[in-house]
Image 1 (cartoon, rainbow, N blue to C red):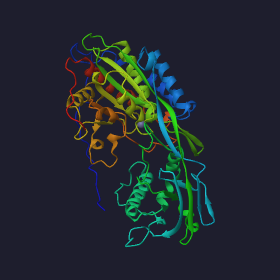
Image 2 (cartoon, protein in one colour; image 1 turned 180 degrees about the vertical axis):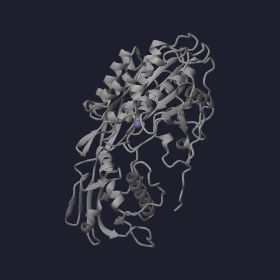
Image 3 (cartoon, rainbow, N blue to C red; image 1 turned 180 degrees about the horizontal axis):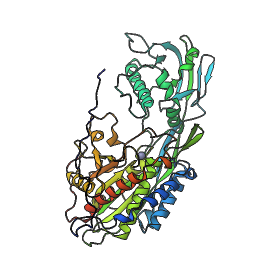
Image 4 (tube, protein in one colour; image 1 turned 135 degrees about the vertical axis):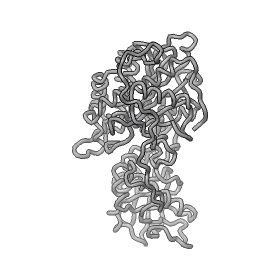
Length: 493
Ligand SMILES: [Zn+2]
């Protein structure tokens, strides 16, 4: 296993701390409505949106729709015009949801395993299995064993994939990597089913991963989202405590049934028209997601995942940017999109990138952000700045200039590197737009220990930092919206 040491130095693009705060010269490019972005309003909005009232805003539930209606109402109050379907603030679409049916049945010998409680089914295809169990230990030395048509029991052990100790969601990644490696090794042997027995790390992913599988997978189409091993072979995951019930010589009898549903989700879309008749047909798109993880089994007495940083922080940030544009419109128009179902796989942004509410070619730049209220007060991530993620040096230059003008962050560029193990660049709503050939930047204060836990709550947010990144995003967008030359695309990421 390769031992990788991450370099500690941050690469600093622009350092302009101590910039004197005087009145901007008329040609400074300083946006005129910076003062409209107020910490007290951001804080009040965030406390409202991350309140238990919205029950964690899970997409595909009424809670996300409720939160979306709240955002639309705040957008209207901010003076933004509706830009959704039929003169509304909403763009609805259907999510395709598939889940293992509670009617499924799994028996091993005399033991019955209740789906989603005693056993988690990681495969996605309906299957009827009746097969004898064969135990292959950790599955690493199969030799010429004949496993065709057998239910193969494999002990999960550490996967080959290198996972840094502090990588986010490590137990889930560990489980998925181990399951994928085992499934790939066994597939050529054509087993009837694979039964995975957890080790301590996989066991610790049970609740988190179990929530995903209970809800099922979501996408624009059925079957497009894969959680865990990509195989048609039935894969059943058991906790280590089930080990004594699973012994060679017994039989697996399983009936794995899948349910499919169509669920509604929604993007909230609003705009401020530009002032220049020649340029107002072009848009700077400010992007957030309003959904989060909803309600799960209680941890320390709290069952609501409020997603204050992820991503109420940016949802209220782009509301504030909307207030600034409504006060002083730019030459180009500003479009604001609160995407639904980001947490289910960037579904809202994928939908809007395919079916934009304004012509695709009129979107000049996407200013996306995800989580902007955490970590060190003076550092922030700006992604889409380095190859292969860089798709518009023009837009990056504006982001760096805006930082020097109003924000003065030390920009953490490590997370934009293609070698970074988190793949952070690919985990937010700018990606479908970048893939569609639109200049895109991703602002983030990066993940932290509260990320995807029930403790990501309003009192933990750094409000001065939230305000500062919001002003930085506003200024970046303002520059792109006012300069005569259109921001150019350089290359696809
Ligand atoms: Zn997020």
